[in-house]
Amino acid sequence: MPLTSVTKDARTLTFTAVGDYPVPQQRLWDAFADPRQLERFWGPPFAPATFTRHDFTVGGRAEYFLTLPEGKTWSGSWKFTAVNPISSFAAQDGEDNAEDENMPASMTFTFETTPTGSRLTIVTRFSSLEAMEQTAPGMEQGARAAMPQLDALLAESGVSAATAWDGIDASAERR
Amino acid sequence: MVVRIRETDEALNQLFRALADGTRRDILARSLTETPSVSALAARYEMSFAAVQKHVAVLERAGLIQKRASGREQRVSTNRARLQRAGELLDYFESVWRQRMAQLDDVLGSKGR
Image (cartoon, rainbow over the protein chains, first blue to last red):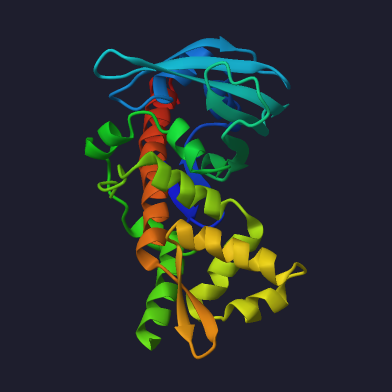
């Protein structure tokens, strides 16, 4: 599986995912730099993405829409805050025409070369729950789709939400 | 799994607004493993008792913690179910990224390795 670890922090509303790929770092970077490739993997299978803009420079924007099963579309946009080929980029993530500074989530993508190819690390930090909703189109469809289950990989990552639940369980037992 | 997340949007907004503040997250973290009194919490932060009380009230309204009277003190403990809800939302994002990373793998593969 490409996704090799996930870390979720419910208290800081931060989500981190790491994926490893058997291709050179440049190749991995190109998949994000080229909107025609990006749109082939950004949307979930039930809601393919179309990028209408991809100005991959600091201060530039990317605009895209997802086509949901009912034929409705959901628009999103990014504002790039850092672009360092081929090692990292960062963007604010928000709804369509979100020119304001209060975009609901910030994303950082880091690219590295590894012994087996390359590694992508993404960190998303949400500013609020509204943020999560805005950046989660088709959440219900997504939940219904047969997504691969969380498994031993999450257990390996250790520092996930599971740690927090353990803490809660311990305090509950003491009461 | 993300099954019961469609309670009212307002409830969800309240939940995440409550989690968006550093002091409140700290109060929440402390209340996970102990049941501090409001005055004990107030002593930890460089702010007034009233300000701390206000943070506690926000957490309580969001359903993240509950207050219980213990003698003359109000003790704070976390509400496990609500915190779990926040975790469920993160689980959704995990499923999205799991899928997305797999699709990216397909894109990289079809272009020739």
